[in-house]
Image (cartoon, rainbow, N blue to C red; front, side):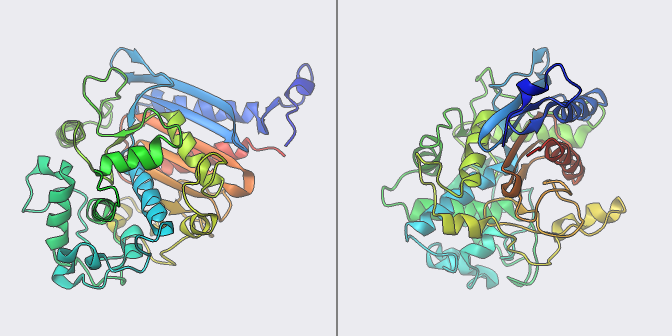
Amino acid sequence: MKDVSEEARGTDLPIRKGGLDTDALGRLDACIQRYIDNGDHFGASIVVARGGVVAHRRSFGTSAPGRPAAEDDLFCAMSLTKSFTAALVLRAIDQGRFTLDTRVAEIVPVFASGGKQNVTVRQLLNHTGGAYASILPAPPSLQPMELGDLAKTSAAFSAMPAAYAPGTRCVYSPLAGIGVLGHMLVLTDPAKRSFRDIAREDLFEPLGMVDTRFGGPKNEPRRVPMSYTPKLSNPGPEALAKYLDALFDEPSEVPAGNAFTTVDDVFRFAEVLRLRGDNGKFRLMSQALCDYGTQNHTGDMKSAAWDFYTEAHGLPEFPANFSLLGGYSRGTGHHMTGAGCTASARAFYAVGGGSTMYMVDPARDLTFVFLSAGFIDGLAHLQRLCRLSDLALAACVD
């Protein structure tokens, strides 16, 4: 890719930087600003890069009352956190600690309860294992604030009966699926470390993700609070935001949801996946497993957890397209996707809590990270991300 920005200055040609058209990037910025002006969220931080070179980084709006958004804001990644845990699971597979076809009950015996005796690691990664399908609330055996205790949550979810015959449906089950996998990492760790320490020592520190951690102290001045804008707020969402703010404090460990991170740290993580698991300084996983993990592992199944939303809003069925890396594969066909309608079939992405995303399109060498302050509930977040990703993709020039 040739950077022709200097040649283009003073002419009627579009200015290009790092293989990206700056006019097109301006349209991406303008779209984000419209969402803020319309009251859909408060602020955001973004990174757009090609070939590993950051060509566009911006912060918009506010991250907390009276506080302008900043590039080092510390966001709760929400379900984007699943990608961090899934990457550690694949790394453990490369290390020979278990396989994608290992039955979960071989490592967590109580998981065999209620018809789940044959559920595999792969099925928990792609949400087809029949695990407790509710995102919230917690199982009856747990108090709400105990969701931050990994050993207790793993035991509680493992003891629950299968929500459906494993392998027959795809129903998003982050706490029960990814949470149990996080506990498996602890149980099979040769050094007998906590989940938080495994993530820090085997993922965050080697990748230079110096600001990323599981659980965020409330007194951290850069922490972005959970919030809804006045347009989207009502007593239900406000109560949920306050609950999550309290639950995700230190020292809680929620492998599916409570990593705190910055836009630059998410970019570092997405980049090692763009580079197929090895950034030249740190080998997170093998190229073979990274390539396999970013594919669609749910075939033509739909994402059944969103039936209530698609039916209520007159939307077509939402294809699952779950990868094994805590997110989704773009796949083929015209459908709702956070990667953008124009992304290549091998593009992959992860989203979190109506507020976060990273997207990688290997065919265009594009990495796009979007972290926002303020939730947008349901698939409306995916609809927003689809539009933003398409605008980022539209900036690509060869």
